[in-house]
Amino acid sequence: MSKTKILYVEDEVFLAKIVKESLETRGYEVQLEMDGGEALARFNADPPDVCVLDIMLPNKDGFSIAEEIRQVNNAVPIIFLTAKTQTTDLVKGFHTGANDYIRKPFSMEELIVRIENALRNRNSSNSVGTQKDSIAIGNYLFNPNRQTLTDNTEEKKLSFRESELLRLLYENKEKIIDRRDILNVLWGSDSFFNSRTLDVYITKIRGYLKNDPSLQIITVKGIGYRFVTE
Image (tube, rainbow, N blue to C red; front, top):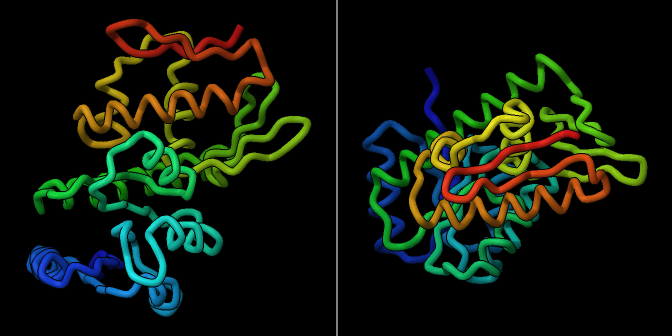
């Protein structure tokens, strides 16, 4: 069985060495790049299974690298490593196509859980997409395999995590879904940090569906959400 290949972009020499060696001892193949300006070339030369990107990098930051990767590959999971925790930073990161965030400092166990969860979610999405290409949701056509949401005016490209959240809400429509269940399914943890991230995603999905007033994501205070199609 081939090893999971990770593109790891980090300019802190000591941290990069520790993380690379730790991942390799656990059976991963790690491509380390310390210059943000060279990251896309490394990605294209030997496409990885998952990308782990620091945000603050020389020559090109992690946000820009993620945007470039998404122009050539919309499926590979992207995980940001960052000391930034402001909501504006989270929104910017997810708009560039990130699947997950890990705050520095972090444990290797947390990083590995996030990597494996991202890979499982990607495989699950591919499986769903082959079973049914498109789903009618109100006035929209949702394609979980292509990660698109289309109405009469435009086709919107969703990030992987946005697509998975919309699919989860739709598959459980008219039911109350516990926040903790969503967090554990999509992020692998119901931590406070992930909970804030879910709030950002719910707001984004509501915005995507705003042209059809029959579709509502209702917040059930203290419990979770209910997706209603009137």
